[in-house]
Length: 155
Image (cartoon, rainbow, N blue to C red; front, side, top):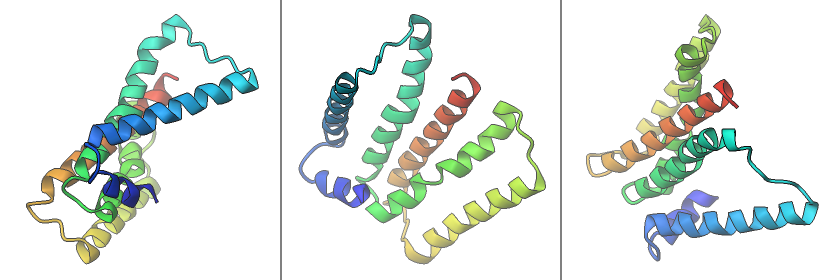
């Protein structure tokens, strides 16, 4: 549901403000919930570089790219492109994590990407005017997938 809502919100707010305010509200809510439950949220000093990198990829780059891309494409088109990230993560796991690229995984990846292509070709008009948005959202999906792989490699 958030894709159409975000697309509508972009009429009122610049893209990064729309996500920034939502992120600030979420952070405040999570801090309050942690405080109310007595949960410690301290980060060991040696974990800060990884935390900042992962947050930059999985939150900042993902949300920024996805939101900016919506300036060119519709919410449905953006969601289809954005949620290629699990397939991208599966493809990155092979060279980056040394996971086995079995025939079953290759078939699953081909079917997933084939499904995306069918959805885009059948129901979406991605012309030259929409290309920048599609590419920016795809960049966000790639960066999110990279963050996921790096998190798995070094939690």
